[in-house]
Length: 86
Image (tube, rainbow, N blue to C red; front, side):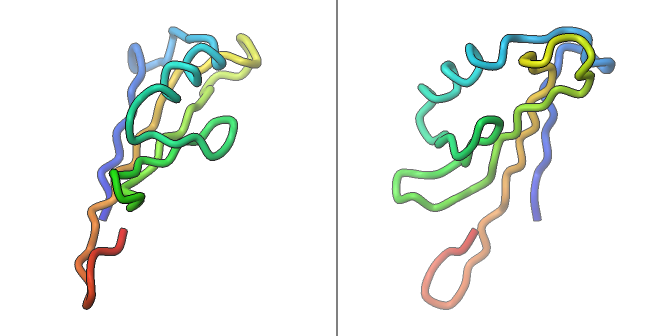
């Protein structure tokens, strides 16, 4: 089971931010680990993966390196014999 959240300025994704400045900001957030140019993993202090963050450009025609939507996918960890699994 996941919770999916989209973060955007409005329904039409009319505002953008520069990709590299957003990546620099998110890299400083505790618990977010970058694993590609537009993707971060959400981890706890032990390294357990709880979800991911995708940086999106829903309208590419404006600026090639602009982001206008952040999608967050939070997985609910499941308890298995011997511990948690995400």
